[in-house]
Each structure stands twice: as C-alpha cells, then as structure tokens.
Amino acid sequence: MTLHWWHVLISYALTAVVFGALAGGAALRHRAAKRMLAKLDPRGDRS
Amino acid sequence: MDGPLTLGPGAAAPRPAGGRNLHRFANPGRFLRATGRLMPVLWGAALAVLALGVAWALVFSPPDWQQGETVRIMYVHVPMAWLAMGGYTGLAILSVMSLIWRHPLADLTARELSPVGAAATALCLATGSLWGKPMWGTWWVWDARLTSVLVLFFLWLGHAALVRAFDDPERGARAGAILALVGFVNVPIVKFSVDWWNTLHQPASVTRMGAPAMHVDMLYPLLVCTLGYTLLFAAVVLARTRAAVMERRVRALQLARARREDATPA
Image 1 (cartoon, chains in turn green, cyan):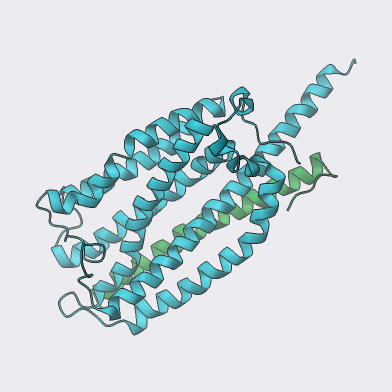
Image 2 (tube, each protein chain N blue to C red; image 1 turned 45 degrees about the horizontal axis):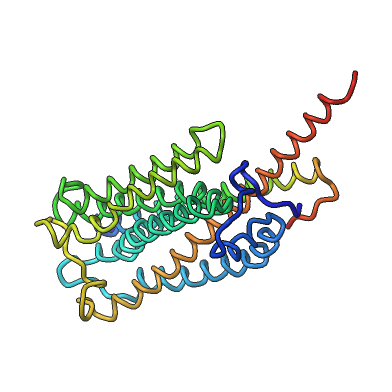
C-alpha cells in the first residue's frame, strides 16, 4: 500500500471512529436515561 | 411526561405568534414520540447513502491526474468542511430562536449540536492535513482558510464549554447563544477567505458561481457522500437531543423526589 493510500485510509478511519463514538455515546446516554426514567416514573410514557 | 420542557421562568413568558408552532415541540413527550418514529428512518438512510457514497469514492471514482489516489480524501474533507459551516449556521439559527422565542428545545439542541460540530470541524482540519502533507509538502500553513477554520473550531469548543459552565442552564444557553451569534461573523470569512486573500488552499470548485470546476465522475460521489454525512450528522444530533430531553426529565423527577422526602416529617 502506498503512502497516499495510507493517508486516505487514515482519513476515512478517523471519520468512522469519531462518528461511531458520537453515535455510541448518544445511544449509551439514551439507554441510561431510559433506565432511570423507568425506575423513577414507572407509569411514564417514553419512547 | 406531557408537561412543557421548561428551563426556567423565562419559558413561561408570553411568546410572539411566530413561535407558537415551534412550541408544539417544547412538549418532551410529543418530541420524543415524533423523533422516535423518525430515528430508525434517519439512521437507515444515513448508513445506506454513506455505504453507497464511500464505495463510490474509494472504488469507483477515478484517481486525479495530478493528485493520484489522495484526491479520495476530498470525499470526507469537503463534506466535513460544509458540515462545519452549515452546522454553525444552524447553531446561529437555534440561537436566534432561543433569544427571541426562548424555545427550550432550541437551547437543548444547540447544547447537543456544538460537540458534534466541533468534531466535524476537527475532522475537516485533520483530513485537510492528511491531504495537505502529500500535496503541499506540509501538514499546516497559517493561511487565511486554514486559520479561519481553526477559529471556527475554537468557536464550537467555546460554545460547548460556555453552555455547560453555568449552574443555571438557561443562563448558560443565553450566553452560548450570544457567543454563537457573535461568532457567526467567521462563517463568511471561512467561505470567502480563498477569494479575499492569497492562500495555499485552493479556491472554491463546487460552490463557485457558474458551473462546478469538477468532472461529474468526482462531483456525483462527492454529493452522495455529502448527503450521507449530513444525514449522519443530523441523526447524531437528534439522538443526543433525545437523550438530553430524557436526562432533563430524570433530573426533574429526582429533584421532585428529594423535595418530597424533605417535606415528609421524620
């Protein structure tokens, strides 16, 4: 693999990692909040 | 969970007629139900368009006659640059909504938007460096385009830090909105920096007046990648906003429970 291809690969990998981390973080926050809401307000309507 | 998403006394004040429709979504239950239906569609569309765009960019689009394979960095770098500027424009619009209509969801969305915008701007800078090193022979130059994008990155970070710096979220949101509007002056500077100053960075080739200076074999995958990253950006911001709405509800319930326990005689 040439140096040019390494630069391309790192660019795409960096983007995938950053957006993956942002999406994963949002999913974890959502799951934690949903669990807490279920504990605090069992009758509440949430999606 | 049907009460309004209030952040403080300001949220209960009478609002101009223009903001009435916007306030339908200040109800957290309604917002969560509406976005709950939208989220799977948004994630699915983002991943499908990105899969097509990335395959097109990496496999099917041709290498550049001068730049060779490194031109494929453009399919990430340019969408990130557009998202950095477009996202900041969105932040400025949310800030106007926050300051004029005191829309609580605008505050929350702005708060959740700024870390994602900072990430997109950081990716724009990083991929620009990775592209610049083999083409220009340097990772970085202090030219007008690169420096103004760095300033944009600091504005995103400043907003993210400022809205979290106050105990009262409403004060933080107001300070953040003012910073976002003052900082918006940098967006046209970023856009026109390559025209106003002599820069190492190339001038606009897609969004210039007249026809884009790019062959359709590169232009089409670039537009598909831009759509894919924009959908992904929107999905991440919306997912973060949904989580923030639920976290705010958790805090309100915890506060109510603590007050009840304090009021109960021992």
